[in-house]
Image (cartoon, rainbow, N blue to C red; front, side, top):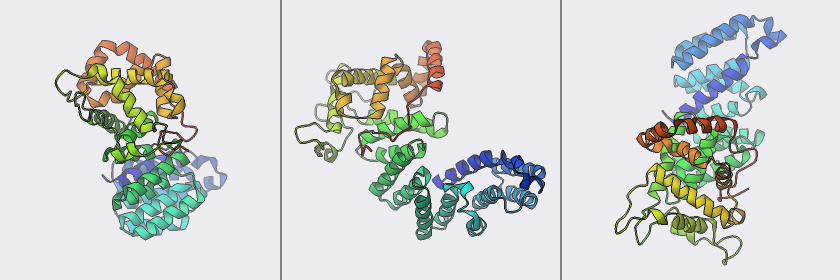
Length: 373
């Protein structure tokens, strides 16, 4: 399933929840039989959830007979048309209403998606840019722009759009997800582990959560060859490590400071006369625990602002860090996670209850050591 198809599913479920609950509230709509419209709309949503878009279109048409030109229904019908790959018809249906304020940035996004499916980048980009002009804080429109450049093979431009999206709308999880995925394909795993961890703190119970948990665990292991006398710690490219700190040549840059302190924290795990091929989740957690304790004790948390590391320090101070890290990497090795839970189920469940009520804060743009706002 393509990224755009997944996007459409998110759009549909959100819009249905948002607008179907408002049908009964309008006296004007009540004159048009909103009860029957609501019934047909409910059936349409069930058809869409069952991946039966043709049946959904028929139901949306019936709903629109009871509430003609009702924008949310027009939007949902357009999504159904896209699901059937009838992109020109979807454009014709959505076009007259895509700027309606009730749709906010989603009308522009879906219009752009239609043209993307038609491989008409010029027109799709026109709609994304028009949407951004009207909704400059839209994370999803920044995402769409970045996705276009990513598909074209222009990773740097894609990353920049996604980073801007994370700044514009800090709670839009997809920006962090794709930044982590993109950097995982490079030598700069450093940004994967920070953007990936930020994503997991926003989106905790989806298939993407499981994917990112595995990716983070693999990224940490991919970046360390403990026992290798030449290059045991390798989270960053040489180019990144050689880039001077903005505060002057005498100051270690954040990437250098990070790798240096990881190297110190990893000393107890280095085998004698061999290379450790892989850290278990338990050993990785112990390494990270040692790193966070030393990072804060040495004052690096004040020198190098990083909101993920600040959150880790807060968790450590509250006695929650190790359970949090088990949660973070649990899908990296499900067998090891299962054994841990058998021994520590009560404590872990207590953490999950606490974590459900407490979490990393995303009210303002995050600083993760890369392009801090």
